[in-house]
Length: 257
Length: 257
DNA sequence: TAATCAATGTGTATAATTTACACAAAGATA
DNA sequence: TATCTTTGTGTAAATTATACACATTGATTA
Image 1 (cartoon, protein in one colour):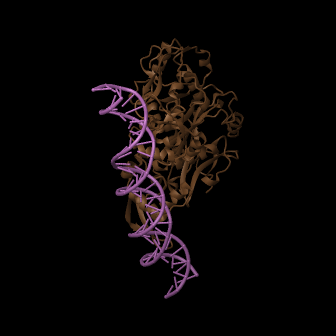
Image 2: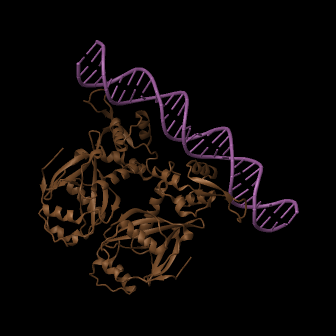
Image 3: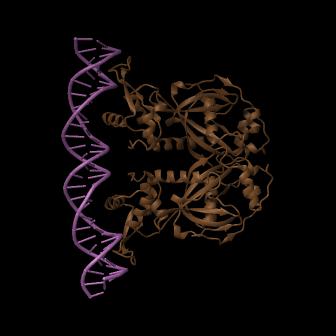
């Protein structure tokens, strides 16, 4: 899960037209091989990893900017995105580091350039279907990789803290987010859905009680098909009933897990 | 509850030294006469009301800026403050309005001034003890007033939406916020505490079950004293046990109300 | 090809929690 | 001194959550 392909061109002109002082950073969650993973980037000539992020264009809302970053990085449209916190410590970014990072990307701005002014970052998290994502690199990025959330590498600035906060909020907000719908493929088995919840919550759940509860919400449809090919007894496939799912999420999924 | 006193001097110099593009706005909640109230300001020569807010100084964290705004407005130190959402729609502020608002305060900036660049606002809510607050006006503000949250007036920009969101988040986060400790005086009765919860949640709760539950958390100490002077049977006074309260809040108050 | 192994599908009894509910005592007021 | 409203207090019933086991399936391997 280590890639150095699909280089996109960066329009360097853009740098002059973005807003200073504000950025967005995205924590992109995916689920694969029973692991909750985040998609991280590594900038050219930089050892530490980064969250996908960027600046706002003057006429762009925060949500639109986050959506654009996501689209550019994953190629996905209509991604589930949620603003979760805004990071505004005075020294969250070290300007010297920032200057050096840009310089190593071949971008040479005056140290007094307004882009080096202190910058707050609005954090968003995304829930994406792992198999649908084809991450893209641009001129500044050298590598992308899905990391297990339990084992993320050292990151620039306060990106480790941002990632930690995203996970905390995701856990706390589980009842209100369509995690199943967004992190799993269209058809999935009950054990797969349970594993997803167990992985996010980092604890095991009783199999029969989980099924009883989740079916009780009336948000799942059991298909005639079963998942074949695996060893052991073939489990049924399920699909979410989107309408009822979103209706149920409006008030939250009742229980806390 | 309508005041035109305590005018503070504004250091106009400051305007030139604050960051553009970013502001903080504070929704200050208080509890009085069985009403949940928010403290709003009215700017000179402006009909609509405003949330207390302001810009960041270059060396100030978001939290510090919110804290400063609160301190300036309420005279309180060590206020409970919580960041709840960042508002970043492209057109949340109308620049023409903003220009006109400043002009009517006697502040005449060029329409192209960077302070008129689109600005995002980081929303904080505060929980304050009503009786402790002595709101202060400055050169720009003409009036302050506590408004029942169910009946706030028309406000500038998106301040009505910000207020609504603050209340929604407060309700959803009730389990995690020390509302009792911050909104009530040091000593209070069980019926007063219940009224606070009922008011925030906008629903009635069973008296005996409420008491059973809240006492079950072990965060209250019943004093020997009773509240005297009221009509009818004198209720006991209680005090929060802060240590245990904060410990209980770490994982949330278990139940949802 | 039969036996083995691990995962899946399924229901009930018990424990824990939540809810509903009423009467006596207090203190001001008429 | 009677009245009125509020406060203090406990239990039974209903609901919800938890704990738990065996038969079936399908691949693997003996």
